[in-house]
Image (cartoon, rainbow, N blue to C red; front, side, top):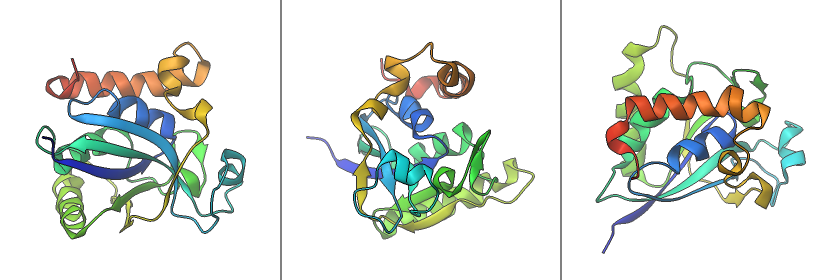
Length: 177
């Protein structure tokens, strides 16, 4: 019997976050979607307008007996730049913000402790938003497993693949086999 929990993380384009977490041992699912805005049932076009307040996020369902929320955060800090406000690389806008939407007080405290612990590895201050988990809206079907289904696409080669490779090199012990 697994101890199933959820995490809701955003760190730029959801294709990158989903591609990494779908490879993590103990992660049962990683679903690209939207959260944190006012509009119910947003579409990709809505969120890309930058007017909804939603971030591109990934809802991660994981077995806490295999991998902890804190270990998921260890990966999170490595696969994106938490010191850039509202952008990652060439992706600009509030929808690309670094965000941890916590499910409960334990996740909130773990996120605060984790951010404090990794701050020394960054020259600039961490600007990751920390907020209670709002409603999660799964993204359109064509966004799910995007990297897996489109590995030769330009953005995937230039942006997603290097993040996946960085994860695989640094966290080889966390790879799903």
